[in-house]
Amino acid sequence: MRPVYLLGAFVPVAVALDLADATPAAVFATSALAIVPAAAVMSEGTEELAARSGPGIGGLVNVTFGNAPELIIAIFALGDGLQEVVKATLVGSILGNCLLVLGAAMLAGGLKRDRQTFGRTAAQTQAALLLVTVAALVLPSVLPLARHSGLPTVGQLRHTYGTDLETVSFAVAIVLIATYLAGLAFSLRTHRDLFNPREEQLTAQTWSTRRSVAVLAVSGALVAGMSEILVGSIEHAARDIGVSQFFLGAFVVAIVGNAAEHYVAVVAAAKDKMDLAVNIALGSSAQIGLFVAPILVLLSSFVGPFPMALVFNPYEIAGLIAAGLVTAAVVADGESTWFEGVQLLAVYAVIGIVFYVA
Image (tube, rainbow, N blue to C red):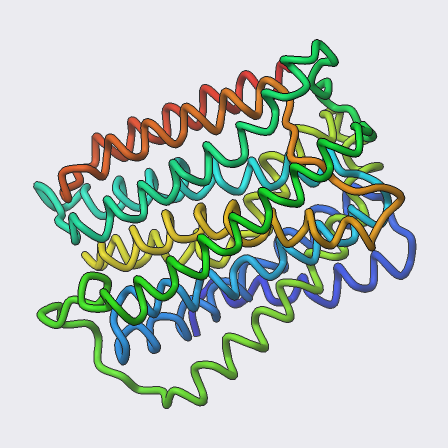
């Protein structure tokens, strides 16, 4: 048994502490640790599916299950009217995947190798999709700036906008979902060969497809349950720890909520499966912006006290633009080294420092 599975003991502990109304910091910490073994199980299921269908499909499956906790966390936060916390978590997830995860993957994979290669066309397609995501999320914020009504302030929990901004956000959400569906058709049907190189030999399959899917479903549900407990304690835990909810949402919750694909991508890169690692990191970033964010915009019309507008604070806007541009530049050549991983991690660290001070 892998040592990481020993952390599974924190699952009943987190549930017990939550039911016993223990200190929020303890509930927060134990639920975060409980997510890790579920992420490890999910990694095994993903690798088995990747071995059968290629890195593109395997990455897509992992991204889909990995982002389920993100969606559940956000829905509960929407119900409490915490739209700005939801947006901070969404931004943090995009930053974490394309900077932290991809950077850690390149570092882990490049330490014992001179360089690693991955499908250049597929990576450029994913990077372009990430830039489209960044543009679509950032552009609605131009409207309140042009009208001199201002952007939401850092740490603000409630911020309402005019009906026209909510309408614009709704329309942008529809465009993003349509783009996401078109991207699925491109990667899974019309240009499947670009995302599933036949020449790459992966590990031998030991699980059936049905077993792999079942493991992914169970582990995904477990991650979601622990994430629900996690977000329920975030407000009081932030006060006990001494940091803002904005920082916890953008970094801690975003990292924990996506722990599954974080773990898988780094392990895949260490095994020299960079196609899978890049697909997971960039694919998850794009899916957050093209699918999770617009779905939450649509759901906010029915969940919570008022609709959520796609208007971000200045720090979130700057972080999204920086992450999109740097990531696109790093993957453009279809090769990676450990130092490129360090560069991505450095950008993530700088953004983290700025967000913490903010």
